[in-house]
Image (cartoon, rainbow, N blue to C red; front, side, top):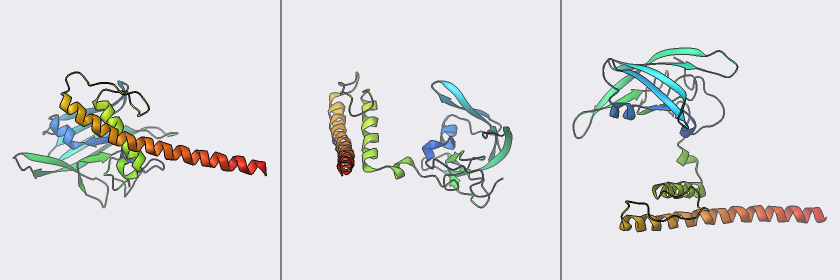
Length: 210
């Protein structure tokens, strides 16, 4: 197994930019049981773009997949990731991955393919998208999340739709008020950015006069 950050590529450094495996999802889907075979796929527009195989063994899971790097032949990988369990408050057990990178060993729910091997976000120095967001970007994301809930087209510059079928009016009005709070922040951010661009264009125009 590679050392800290083995296979790390330059470029994007947010968790959303990489494929990941989430043991909570696998446990909910009933995949974490002795001898269970796993065939996990990543889809884009309904088409498979990548896949990973796995086999659950005693206190560990074996992962196997092909690692492709531009300009090089694909490499078939087969290695184990240790598992650990903790007790849940209401009975049962919760599974965790143990990060397989040498010198780490963190207990985590999610491993990311930031390079050749799956590892925790700390080893690949990945930040959550929200940690990289400006106030404007955060408000824009929240606004689009609400628009999605209301079944409206994405983007605050698009028209607002009405109440979705089946949604209670009380819920709709509460959601509608929240949307206006965050959309006002987005529009304010857009206004500030346009003002910056306008000031820059004005300064460039003045320079050309001299």
